[in-house]
Length: 70
Image 1: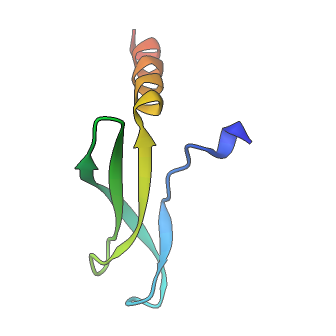
Image 2: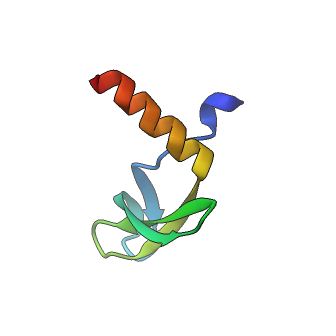
């Protein structure tokens, strides 16, 4: 389904903390066709996963935010 393609995690299970913890995104790598973000545990700073955003998704998000603000 199209509506679930661009989800962002707000909490993930951390093995070190042994419970679901809030996470923050850190930009890990910028490539010509996509950006890769790393999810970090806010309790222990362990890497809990990654998210890739394609160039097309970035453009659509920027256009949507410009429409809302302008």
